[in-house]
Each structure stands twice: as C-alpha cells, then as structure tokens.
Image 1 (cartoon, rainbow, N blue to C red):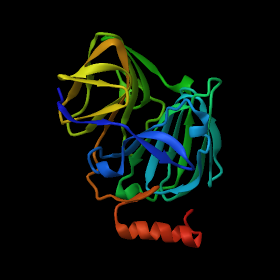
Image 2: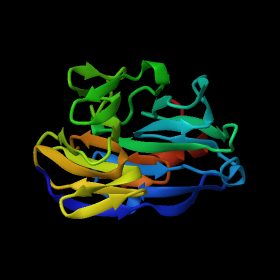
Image 3: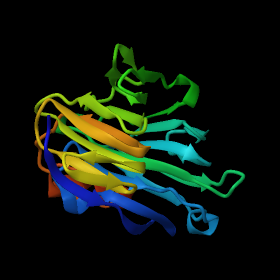
Image 4: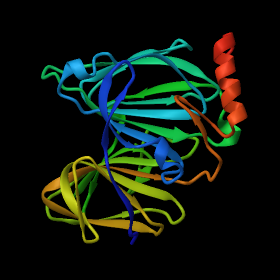
Length: 277
C-alpha cells in the first residue's frame, strides 16, 4: 500500500469578484499533483461571501471540473453554452484553445453553496483542441456499493465493474466521491506510476498512523493501492487518480501552457481579440 507523501490543509483564498473559498493545492504545488493543477473547496454558508461569483474570464490549456454538493451555479460561455448545475451535478469544461466564461453561484433554501472545482492539465498536443462543455446530472452518476463498507460515486473513471458517464477525458483520471462507513478498513486500487490523492470533507480516518479530517488532502507515494481506517463518524472524501504528464508548466492566472512564449501569445490573443479560435 502507498505511504503518505504529503498532507495539506486547505487555506482561505479570495477569488473571482470576491468569493471566499479554501484552496486545497495550486500554483505553489507544481508539479506535486501532476496532472492535476488546482483544487478549490467552495463550501460556504454566507451568501455575501460567494454571490459576487466569477464574472467573465478566459481559460486556455486546461479542463475545469465543478462538482456541486448544495446550491447551484449558472454557467455561460463564448461558444454559446449555458446551463445550471445543482446538487450532485458535475460541469466538465475543456478550455482547450480558448474559452471565455462565467460561473455565478446561487444559494439553496438554507443559504448554502457547497462544492469543489478541480483543474486538470492538458498535454502539449491537446492544449489547442476545440473547447467543449458538458453538464452531467446527478441521476447520471452511478453509485457503487462497496462490500468493504463504502458508497462510491463515480464522477469519472471506473470501479468494481461500473463506469462513470464521462469516459473521454484527455488525461483519463479517476474521480470518485466516497462515503466510508464508521470504523471500517478500506482499500482502494491506485495504479502504480499514477498520482493519487484524497481530500477529506467530513468525518475522519487514520491513514497509516496519521489522523486526517475535514479540509485535509493526503498525497500518496507511489504504489498499487491506498488504505485507511475510518473513524467513529465515518468519512467523506474525494479520491483522485491520474497519470502524470511530466511536461513543463507555464502558468499565468487562468491560462496554463507549456512555455512562457505560449503564455505571451495567449495574452496577446486576448489583447487583439483573437483568443477565441
């Protein structure tokens, strides 16, 4: 089983037009989580702290995956897509060669807006592919009942013979939302050579001899699987697995390319109005 490489506690961050969120990892962690670039936990009970949202802004060279737990988010973009994702839904956006979009959060009846956004890198040969956007509704996401004592929602990837509805993602990650029952020992596969981490968002568990809880991510060393022992309240966590790209990263705000020259070209495209290809 894999050993712990790093434990990170999410830190408060201000993004968009004034959205208060928690950053799990990001720019300063390159390339530890390769092929993943960034994860944000935007669970919030105060509408004033998230209603400003994320007005129109560009992306190039990445994919963004937004997973809602409570509340909703309205999306619109420069290629004519629009939609709303609500509780349990997922929005998968491939920025590719360039897209300009906005994401505006809305509260549920209790004022809550809970969810996560993950940025996945695109390999060099796919940085400039045509943009695309997909909504995956909660009813489309399969739930696997694990006999070890867990419920596994398959946002992306496969487990115990079932597959998630999205299977043509460039980096082919596994992204699961796991509820582990109380006081169980759980083992999950994690192919050797792949980056693997979990992010706890409720409850707690022991990983090796270390206790982890809410707002903590565990990045694992290489190996063929992970093991954890759940606490008395069980645990809820996100499980991520992806094959590292091993490519240079040139990161400028919402744009992630391979070289500084490509970054300069992207921002020049924005200035001259040729960003959308």
